[in-house]
Length: 255
Length: 334
Image (cartoon, rainbow over all chains, first blue to last red; front, top):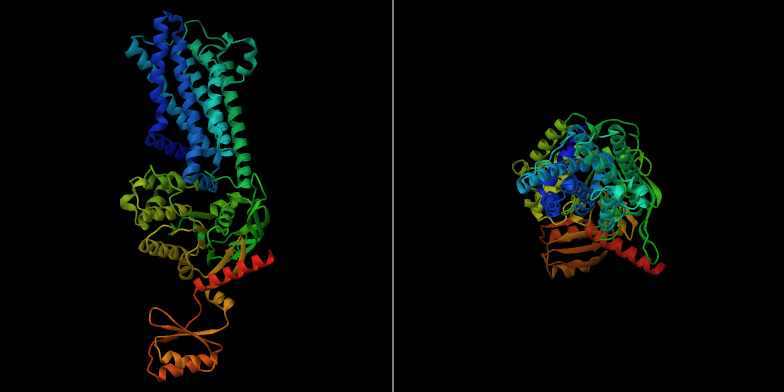
């Protein structure tokens, strides 16, 4: 617990001192303004839940992915990656703690988007199912941290992971139903989309923002958590393998 | 600099009869995309006894850092084996890591935008200290290394010397039994380098084993009980600095403060092989045996010379000769 707390505290400080890590907290209100403006301009209040959720999920995803790369890339650059791998602490646990804290910080986007809606558009977001909303958000954060751990493994393995990550983000957001529900996309995308935790998260969060009763909450939340934990476990396993591989190749400290 | 809570440097554990560091036939190759693999280490066997300050000497690219990385468990050998305090480097790295302190020279290895205290507490946690233990240990080390007043300043505002002291503090936060120092005085001004050497001496005085990679011969001579010289990834020699001197010459040497024409008379004495005047007003007289040493000493003292001493070749000379000998051998073998 001490390591988790210390690594988390450390990452929190690092995020606050590297203001560029907070770029998504700057971008999210702007994105929210764009989405809400489009909804108002086209007079589509039925899309409000989409317009509120999309910038939040984009912010949470983007910040976690940025930091998962930075945890490795920046440390490699600073020469601290080698030292962390040589330290007694389990490197995967350190990465997971650092990514988790960042994901928690990224949840500030919820408040930002709400503030834009209220202050910029005079719209007070109504949350008919606050308990479901909170649980879905927490499950989404856990799943995002798990996925970010998998991405961190990729960054340890290769120094060109950033390109891959950048190319991956928009397809994942699209198939994750962040911009529009997955069932609005062609049917052939559904099997792949349902493997992405975001498709379950966005559906559940959207349902929590609409007055109709939310069905299968436990199952859907478990699926988000299950997919996230599975990805996290895979990330942890892969990190161990990749660290072993870079120790063999001699590429731990290469910049 | 131990806090007395875990007493690591002197305690007894399994494998206590074994050397602190022992490598046998260590080889490390780096694969390249095109062309043959680059051999960074070739058949390196090194033994460092417990409590010893051992120097790893060699020119840039000799393989010192590669060996350090293997010992610090961030790099696996291609062949051969190694043990640290009785634990195998390839299979028991989890047991080795808590016993090691690693300090690299230069700018790398710290988080520049965080304060010294924040850096230290993070590394303390990575070495298994609880929050409270980490805070106490970090503060104590920052104080001992003269960084207490700047503990809450960002590391990016530190001078090179202060950073290097912080590197050392970070390296010993886990109270290691073996300290790996890779060019720790690199880039330091002479005063800061001297202060750091004093600190290393103090750490060694606490019973820690220190393996010091350096290309600073004076540093190795001043700090090390034994040195291993490496060139082109191979061990050229491994001895105490004074013993190494005997490896390159069996001739005796006398340094005298004298000028011509006295030096011409010395040159003519039986058993004198050569007289080389230096810029500092002294001359190095090389003689073939101890008997000749006595003859030279008596001769110059009789003629009023008061500054006279026998000496062995310095580490620098030994180093140059051994490396040169190794280079020549490599060329012949090719």
